[in-house]
Length: 150
Image (cartoon, rainbow, N blue to C red; front, side, top):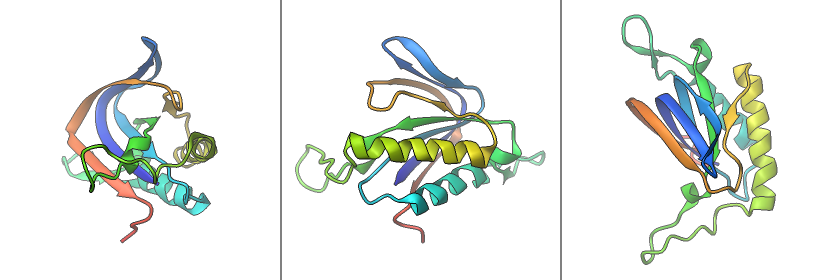
């Protein structure tokens, strides 16, 4: 499982020109799921997302996590995080899980994030063409792969 985390002042997602999810200050998280992802990947990624200390404290030092703030979370499915680009110019998505396999994992991650964060998570619509708007804060953008825990 791969996630791209962006600290944002605000973010929203539209499907068919209708806002389906939006947040104020917090994290916009893009998630790519592969066939090999299991419950351990979900738990580990969820813990990383909610506990990353990337928000400033009173002394402007990034000592606070999303759990420590009143921040929100917007979760967006994005299979293209598993793009393979070594050969040619057309990315291969062979490592990305098929939608019927990825959706249950995505739903489990969503539920785990809500448990770990203690509040409802905003989302896009799995598998839909989505238009994402955001104002990156920092900018702070972090990439995490559950298969590379070093």
